[in-house]
Image 1 (spheres, rainbow, N blue to C red):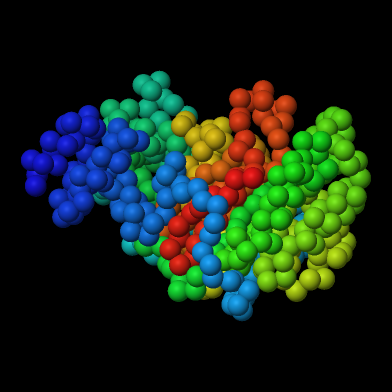
Image 2 (cartoon, rainbow, N blue to C red; image 1 turned 45 degrees about the horizontal axis):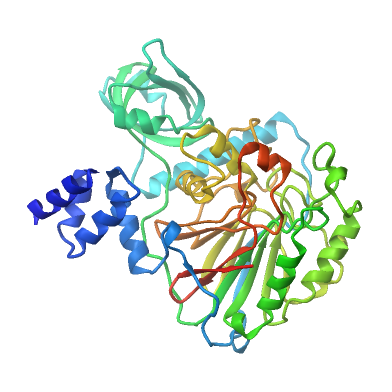
Length: 478
């Protein structure tokens, strides 16, 4: 077995981690796993192998292998009663004073909640102040990244702080694997560090961890029903793709879509007014109320057996800062009267059929795309994976997307979701990370001038559908 595995690894020209080998040697399908991963991974880690096995066994498609189909299963979803609960949502803006105390409490809350997640994993670090009181060489610390820089020798240094004290953590460039991982650390990240004591206020890092998700198989249900996810409709824009959206509405009412029971609409429902300078030149509906009136006209066509959940995005009539409260009912007076239509915040948590959905438009992820090498809006699923590792949707305060202390717990992923539904990038992206099915859906807006200048090519009219009995993802293209 060992020689066969090493022969395939050599043939494919990849590097196989020793702990990944330990998993593969116990599996009959080791050849298939190595060959598939070798197409996309020059170095195959234990995590790569585990994720591949989970995806294979639960039929969740890998990136380009997403199955594209027209017809779906024959079961009729309207024969099943809806089973859902809105778990967490900010229904309206309550307001804050905006003082330093509120923001200090926000960061304290972030640290305390994420520290507890480390504790659940069995990582119980001593306070940073203990460095000054102990001469013990091996140490474990948990803290929030306050500052980050490179030393004269090219090592990565971070200032790590807990609720009482702070210290310097050094990631040596001689440890290439750890150094490469440390380059992805962001300000305000909460991490656990294992290292050796250098002085009373500094350690040399040997390993570090994010709060991360437990590695579990995706949960399935027996009912033969599906979820459909759309976003970024941008009603009011001259670039709104009316024909594609109308075809989508016709399709979801047809027998071809009878299996779909739940529809999630993940923000930027209208193009808004005054969102950016000169926007009025790109609008064909200049009044925000008129934009929502047009949106209502379309969405009132949706069939009654669907349970519909809608959250806002940056272009909607809510505040820009996260968490964004639900769109006020005054903008959607007819839809908000319907029993099957639910206005929720971004982010929000909804339980359907016993499965938890984290729904977030995704504006804060732009901080990840701009700061972490290898991430881009063209592959949003990779950015979402980084957010899940950090168990957080709020990054580097004051740098990109603003966020506020109000209901800040919504920006922390204190529970493990079964699904993450996002939008914002106008680009589809799918993944399964440690049992979490990641769906970043498409748009009904053509390429904007800004996207053209950025070299970003959207994927309009591509709609993902998720079968809850298998987690299999199919696409409908309009």
